[in-house]
Image 1: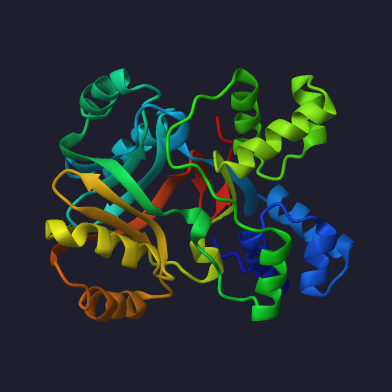
Image 2 (image 1 turned 120 degrees about the vertical axis):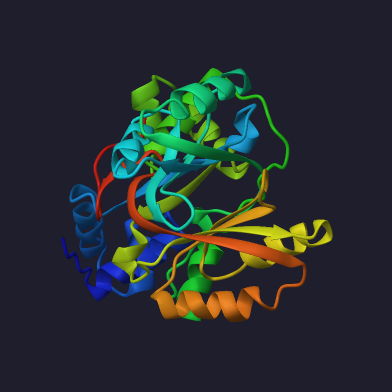
Length: 331
């Protein structure tokens, strides 16, 4: 299925990537259009399942276990069946059919550390058709999809949005959250533009309490609102997941450099065979080749890389896909 976004839609997505919670009036001012036009385009993108603003939960701050990257080799002809079985698990953030050294790649997160062994060894490792598996545990994050930007805004537009919606300074250590905070986080997870009025009505809180909790959750970085849309719709259909092995002294410098690369959608250090993982989005194979032979080649301490390409993404941040559309709300 071919879907083409209008130039105005691409501009709106770019603006929302910089300021996901900006009001329609502010967005209209930046994009030099009317609030009604912005509202209509946002509704169409959401209602057709093309794009939506979600809340990316900073699990490192609110959970006692970090995500795991799972690489699966399958019996011949069983890759899609295995990928669909993994995608159906409630713990699955991301699932894709891959080319390269693995047939299926997934990111999963158990609700509690004690559940990880059963999830990885039994519920995933025991799926019929899985021939071999490898797991790597996230140690630290250097970039997420919330940081990925479509380069369409002018410097003036960028500065206007950044001035009106400054970046918060998130916490660096895990925190305890209240039941009301968890409920607000769940609402933001489903809709990153949820406001205090919505929270007050849905949770039965006073307007002032809803406002206080909402801004506390956002200001502390417990939730990062972001646009969820298939990169291919924005002109970036080539998605590699690159596992890098580096010298110990090069792990942090390499992760930092890759996390700042314009193609980076996800960069993390991991415990496993690899030192770190890079998930990017590129315009075409030639752009990926340039990244590998020039950008990666310039980094000191990189010993080896293993490149797999996403052939078909089934789940992205808990949202099932029917390419290129979102099919359901997060749990």
